[in-house]
Length: 212
Image 1 (cartoon, rainbow, N blue to C red):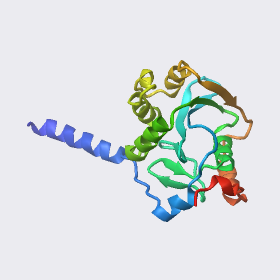
Image 2 (spheres, rainbow, N blue to C red):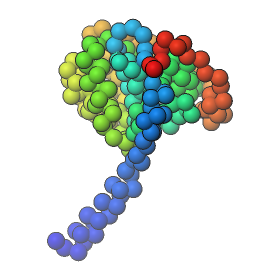
Image 3 (cartoon, rainbow, N blue to C red):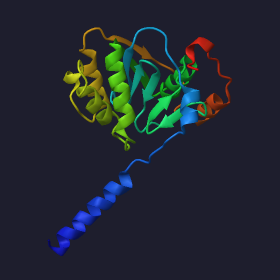
């Protein structure tokens, strides 16, 4: 191997190392305390932030309602002290905390597209395991990570894999039985104050939705 080629290879490896996502691993007690069990049938919901000016996709996340609720928020920036995280998987997303999440993302420049589809408990369990095992996601790879997981799941093969949130959203829309809604808000783009207020807010969760 030439010296020049070796230098290029080392530079590429260094760049990949610099882009590697940091692992986050909440302790078992925090995960158990944050667990939320949703009512109703098992569902999978694709969440997509769409730029109100350009129509381009800014972020993707996947909500899985199975034996418990998991929010796979790859390379996401939202956080809350009552939500436990393990490598981009958020535990304890009660309806109130999910509303916080949506309020954080829907603002004057973005709206949220919510695409929900009912699945079997077995598919929900498979997806829950897949997101748990995926590992931390690097910046700008939210759609890529979700599309990889979905495309390997029975019933979602048509999603394929790709980097673009809006393209994945369009393919998800073609699945039979999808229910689509949109969430708009005129909050400022500077949502740091909102995030801090959410962290101080009193939380409400019916006892029947928590797992002992």
